[in-house]
Length: 340
Image (tube, rainbow, N blue to C red; front, top):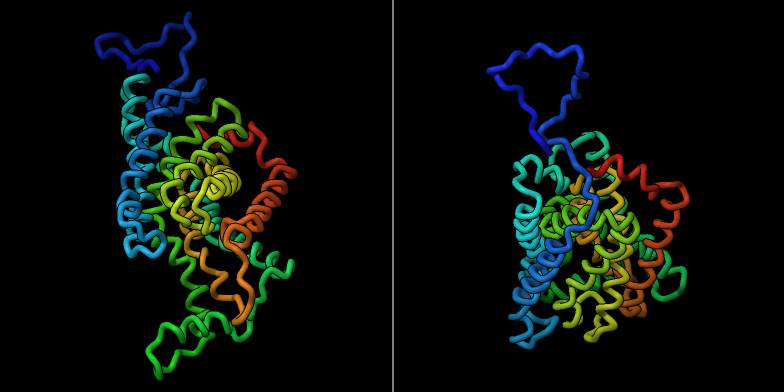
């Protein structure tokens, strides 16, 4: 974009014979007309390569899901898409020329928060709605008879606590502990935000808009599928589904395409990455809801069926997407007005 500043050595009086050009902001957005495939390829290689590099100790130690390093390594993996984003921006800089910091922050949906009300409102809604989707999945699990829940005595949760406490140690009131667990979900969304940002600045901040020239649905589905595939180093160890083969990877791809569509909708609808960041953080914070409400002695369905990313919850995601489609929330004009 040319920068047409007035030459101070010339007259500033407009020529009445030439219509004045409209003022163009220096940081005005320019919608991409084609996918930056070279930058996308760099993003793919760097994000997946770093994910495998970070997860390598888990594979070398051979302890699988029992490895004490698993939480630390899983958290570190979440930062690799942010590093891949930096690499992609460097490639784009060579192709598109220099962009100021403001332009990069705007393109990634980080700043400015405009419109503020919509962005903050969508972020708050994401913190509430994403855990509710997990709860809805659990409700369906109960209706299908796959598990029994105790929402009065929380006997399964109490049983877990008793197993953790030293013999003879009195447990705090179970209702108090359950209330604290639920109250901590929005707090957890904020605590998880830095790690969720490490992912979301890549998937929804950079990759989704980069693929947007393909169309709304291809961009959402392809970015979501890649998000799921990126999890392979952990999924193949049994993470999330308890499966250690390509079936688990396929399930993760499907789950991330659906969940990624919902998170991606918030990005396209607001032009901001922050609702996806806080929604992702809240989803992770609420992933253990099943362990709180399941009754003692209840059959425990397989995680790939009834887990937070299992088939039942995926059906809930699909139903919500269908409702959003039915009310016109995925129309290109509505979304394009916010992305850019």
